[in-house]
Image: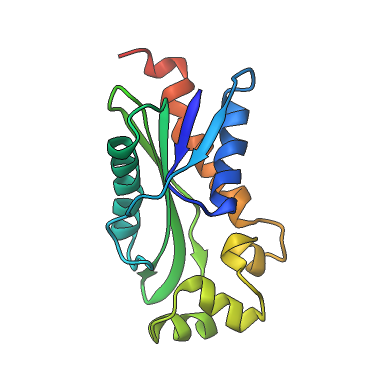
Length: 177
């Protein structure tokens, strides 16, 4: 089974691998990264913009590389809910029949010190690196890992959401259209 991940970020690729291995334990999985545009800013600033980025990645990966069994787009972003900034991420998965399924991670409260840096124009990963004195945290535990002392990481949370997005492709209640 060929799965194309619309990202070269090792955390995103590992999350996809973990989720597909859980949902297809007997499958011969070939997971590859492809570079496609998300069609949204590098730092999406709303839930809708983040979802659009994940969907665009699936569509663009399918158009550029139609030979896969699944295309996966993962997009992390920020939103402001009742005045508080939160981190969110959307996972979108498409198959050759044109079906698409999506799932979102839990929302993550963003501390005021990080928000100030984001509001000044930094991406979340860079803002986190400055506040937490980290290096390239978005390719590590990410904000989830930094804020939960590693109990949850970007990879673990993304893998869970990818598994949820896979449900319509693996659960018998969705049948075979």
